[in-house]
Image 1 (cartoon, rainbow, N blue to C red):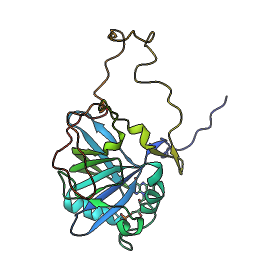
Image 2 (tube, rainbow, N blue to C red):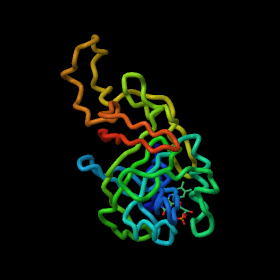
Image 3 (cartoon, protein in one colour):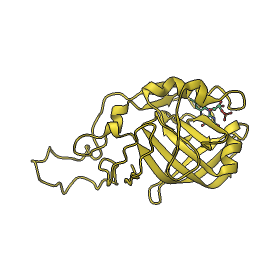
Length: 230
Ligand SMILES: Cc1cc2nc3c(=O)[nH]c(=O)nc-3n(C[C@H](O)[C@H](O)[C@H](O)COP(=O)(O)O)c2cc1C
């Protein structure tokens, strides 16, 4: 097998593709599709988005210092693409996509109600990188849709049909290959026995401390307090 050498480029794929909502419930709001995003710290939980300064949403986020990362599913893929090709300068993307702006719990920016996970962020630092500015943010709250909890309270996000983005195309996930640490796990453990050999997993958000049931259009009073995914 031979290797071709390319010049440096943006080729780390697949990546998540998210809809970032910003602005306020009462005033101007916008949704921008972002693929340059990710988790950058576990404790405290931190995330980033990278935006070109020419985006309409850029000015709103810079001014307000807040945004919400709304995860995308198969059902939301078309709206997500739309929000990535139309500008809030020209259209009201909530109106055009039919997505619902819903109050967040810790920021003024609206969450997108139809997304199963809304990650509320407060900007900590803006790093100019060249084409894009990186907004480094604290994750101050996470809203999750209760339809993905099973009876024991375990959260099954993968059942929402998450979407990722790879070389210009949107995909849903394929088959599951194993769970964290499966490469070193010797054999299935007998019921009730704990493994000594499986690597320690960082906290996962499968068991809620409290459940937040947001029933549209009424806002729930209880707040979800949950652990973060690695
Ligand atoms: C799949 C996809 C991923 C994108 N990722 C980014 C990104 O990471 N950063 C960025 O600045 N723009 C990104 N864009 C482009 C913006 O979403 C697009 O320019 C949008 O129309 C800007 O909206 P606004 O002017 O309302 O802010 C992406 C677009 C698509 C379709």
